[in-house]
Image (tube, rainbow, N blue to C red; front, top):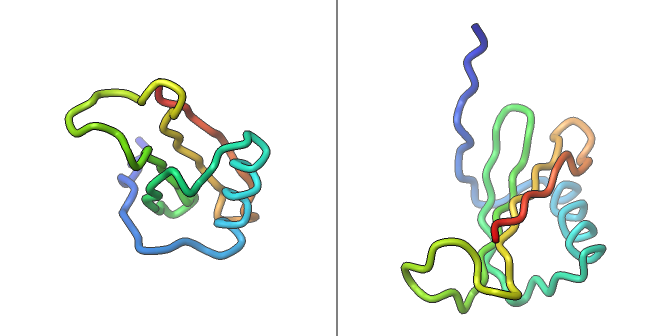
Length: 87
């Protein structure tokens, strides 16, 4: 049986992974100035979670027009593995 460790919150990620994340968000025309970024890491991935800065406290899901994103980036080559959108 394979055991997977939960992602650990980190202060920053590899500059190449951050560049890949920013390129992906630019491709989707997301204004990152409107979002808080939280970084996580596993042995294989960097994960960037976004949250709209003006999101009301206690709101579940995303603010209409400003979805939250979770971007998984492979540590081996800084390639975006997947992008999930919270609606």
